[in-house]
Image (cartoon, rainbow, N blue to C red; front, top):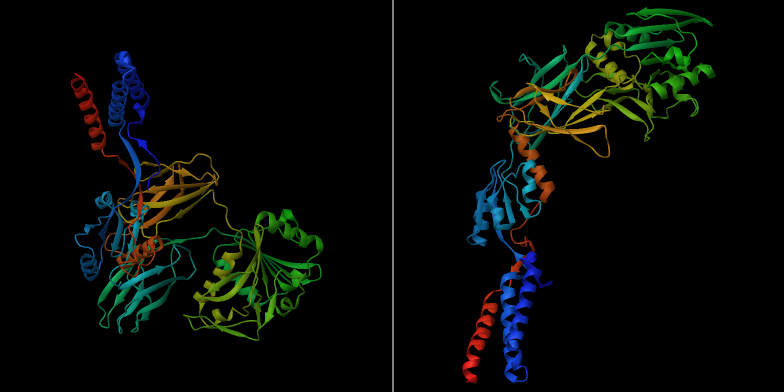
Length: 584
């Protein structure tokens, strides 16, 4: 296909044309005396063609032509030899190259249509083949742990879960979660199936950076495989909590004791008679509160109020409470009673349906808990609070703050039964989701799923500061890229030099330090391969056959063969040399 002539030496166009016109003028001037003879016009045409050929030889005219390069095979780790043999049988003498992480593929100079075999290329190398036609066929079936998920940061006192998937498990083996001292926390037996999902739980005892272990052991206790589970255990900041009750209850008593033992500042107000209250102060709380105002609620992170007190609020107290919730982020937890579920829509932020279920069982603990025979209506605004995938409470965001409640009742019975850990886990999970969130000057987010030594670790930083300088160990500075649409969002890349816990921070601000874990080359192999497979399938799709891939094509400038111009030039010069002799 021809889209017009393009000169390779476009910059010489006008000088060459001017020289050509000058040569034509010189020839005409030289032969002008013979203008009345027929031979003049023959020599004029020959000279013009000769000069034209010279001009074209200098300018090198070319035409855009459809160019189709050849096919090639790129081999990555885990490719199937049978697939390679089949391709080489179909495409004789096809070029083949083994992929090396971080190295540019040399085959791309000769082929723009590729068969990609194996588990694929690293995500940070996919840019090399983005403009090529690629058929990705995958590699050998993975075995072992292909997914491990958990919260990277857990509050002290909150039970954490490790959810994992194991491909081709061996019956009789066990999945075991251990702490950093090697003590078993939870275990699940393997069954004979293609893929098994397991959920393991742990209860942190102290704050800090810990590396738990996910083990696979056989029936004799021999460790088959081991994967690190790095988790940051943080001790939350003490909260300022206001508890308001119409009359004392066991639920309030034990909840108050639990919060006090955790170091929270608690002011408990219990109504004795109309207009008379009993106040209790714990961990530094002071100043009694009678009616709610914006001023006296402003300093609290959480308000725990029973249903009767909530419905008995005066219009001014309720208005002040709602204003502080919306503007300052106060969290309000309404302790439920039967009357809460009968409130009209205008008097309660929640909507319920009666489900007649009075008991729930938490998954891993097999612990039965009493509940009110109601369920939250499924609405867009209602946010679930889950424990072992069971909804134990919910909240409704209201601008900066939240209103929350639970369907559980008589949870103090867990303490009487000696199940302090479950009681603490339930209330830590509920109240942490509802209480005012501490505003952070900076917020970090790691983007790389499995950081490794000498490989790019991408991260994001959110801050309102205009100038940010991020440093690593040793004082080196990491350049940041600011998002043009979100000025408070910055992005950077670091290449970790050591495995284990690493950190980055904003210069002169150790409080803003961000810690992340770097895995060595022998850890998370199957998981890394699984993530790489998913990235390649997202990029190229799943190719089923060898013959469905057509060579990609594009237009390239192809010079017109110079032999035509040399032929014309020689013929014309030969005629001009021979013509005077013929005339004589």
